[in-house]
Length: 414
Image 1 (cartoon, rainbow, N blue to C red):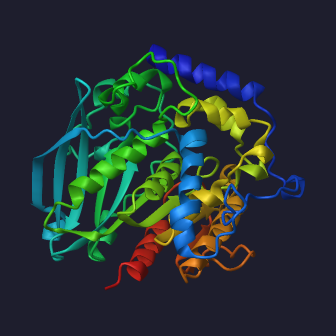
Image 2: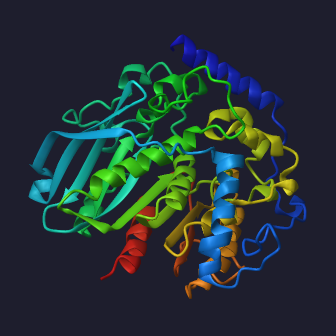
């Protein structure tokens, strides 16, 4: 075991010994009152979609930027995309596999990332689902030796990695149903360790140099991963084979948090999917069920801006909660998924958050979940806001992929 890996493992073990007790008993969830997504800071009540877009939505976006995920830089960086390898006969000729090097230049620095795309050959204009992976592009294809190393592989082994479940990459199912999947290792954008900020895309922007005094609203790792998702969208919308009107972003666990924040900021993603994103993602922070704000900001401080930790023990004073993050996706389609045994992510909190986001969808005439009763296992709800809870643990399964493709079918139909 590398020294840095061992040190991080010891630190996480020590943190677990001193961590506050987690609550997994619904009867112990204290009463809470959620902020109203339809009440502006000056007290104005929002009654139309125009009011939401012009007045309230910018207020909600500002809260998440300044208090939770940090501010995404407005500066543009130069981006070059090079097709490194292509196999047009994958899956017996049903699919094409492309490997694209993304090269960014800015602030006197450069940064690379490796994008993997699997697309059906039979579809001329293909809808695309983008989702980051945890262990590199090769892992998603069973460690196929033809898959080039991801850009961060040179220091990948030096950092502690929580895989959060490798998940199923159901490429053939997606191809058979007419979808392309694009993926990239999230470490390529920001290695998942606070000490590696200098190896992230932050260096491409003035004011984000390594060793800077971290502002309370400094750009977070989740913010950077979301930025990377948008750079993938930049590439996809220029490809003649891709249907740029039908782009989706999906993520699991910490990358589910990322998918939500990417979808909130970038309206090119017509479908936004959160797979068991939990605390800091889809679930309501105020419930303090499973993983809490104190636990997550203590273990992973780099995921959020420094100011977010100011709400530890003061969750009821937060001027926002995660149902408002989900509401930022409106009127585009939103899907939230939970797993029965994944109590750490608080499935009920994820469901209730999606339910309360429906207030904003109603402004557009769309149907939200429209029920406060969480559905049973494998009983998906698929309106403009969708939800399911399945049997099993914290992971991505074939069942999940099937439901996501069903949801995309519903909202990407001509």
